[in-house]
Image (cartoon, rainbow, N blue to C red; front, side, top):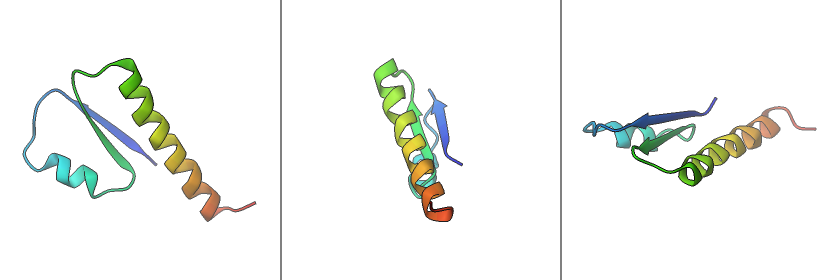
Length: 57
């Protein structure tokens, strides 16, 4: 299941943990709607692709 974490506060080491997980996405505030939609679509596409490989056909 994809996770999108939104934060306005920098957390040392957090972005490294998030980027090591293929199902996790991090967005730093402030962001605009287009940036959010881009990340959300990436997360959804990744989940759909994984679902296809787990349950083909």
